[in-house]
Length: 186
Ligand SMILES: [Zn+2]
Image 1 (cartoon, rainbow, N blue to C red):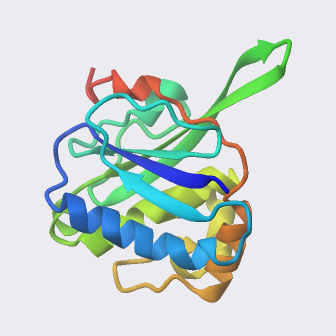
Image 2: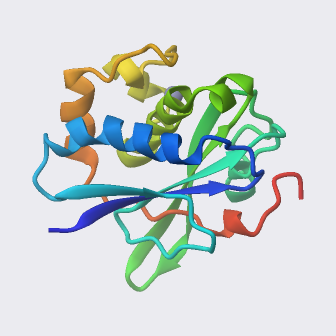
């Protein structure tokens, strides 16, 4: 069975607790994996190169200057994102013979709280990945728990979160990789 890969792209070299962040994200994803049967494992990486994600993989850009990279994909995204907040957007990038292609982008702006707490950063990350896989904007927040609009590093991933997110993990969401080359303020 395939592995779900999560690629964390630290564009601003802002993440200090790299190993802990990977471990905390993986710990949040494991209960979700248990509620589905498509993937048998999840791997979390900070690649030192531009990755080539599978159609089911997930990508998050970490930034620290407030300037959105997601707004480069879709100008409807917020151009400025507050510290310790994230946003996820998608955009149709045209039609091919194979059908419409939609690209997805999640970003997290690592402020003092997320920098100090790998668990806090992991929860911000997983929340944005929920927006990404469900392809839901604010409607996601009705799921509560870590999907709620107001959560913090003490908020638990609920069993409902694990069940619903687990069921969504095999959704194919093509990730926007051009953000790799954009410096956030460029
Ligand atoms: Zn949200």
